Length: 172
Ligand code: S3P
Image (tube, rainbow, N blue to C red; front, side, top):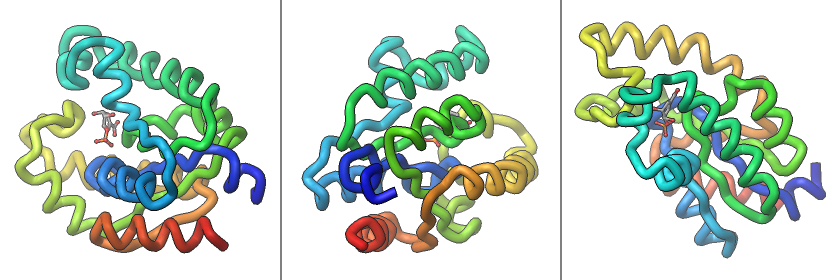
């Protein structure tokens, strides 16, 4: 693990709204590494938003973009990568990301996530009348998968604190 930790990528995973992008950016600054947000990477490649990809091409196509992004980004090393909330549900993605880096789970309290996603309309999976129920179901089914894939986890509610905790864990 030490080699992956020092020379590989640091890959942030967790549920939508857990702070992957914010904590990732802060962590990259602290470590002096480049930061890549996988959703943004895909949006730039496809030249449209994640919502538009879901609406126009379907979720399956988006998942293939994610798999592609994993393959492409892992050719580089020393990055901080924020995945999307669904990236690690594909075991092939987990494999490739783990081989080339260390996977860290961001696990703030569920209430924090609910608050962050309350007014959000950029996540197609949550754009439904039963948002609250759907979200809890998704959260409960996914959390064990994130936990199984991750090398380490932090539970801070605030992204700045999460980045701090992560930096400390990585320095060990
Ligand atoms: C998804 C999470 C989103 C984005 C897409 C699908 C998911 O990323 O990739 O809407 O399946 O959980 P964030 O985790 O950054 O919201």
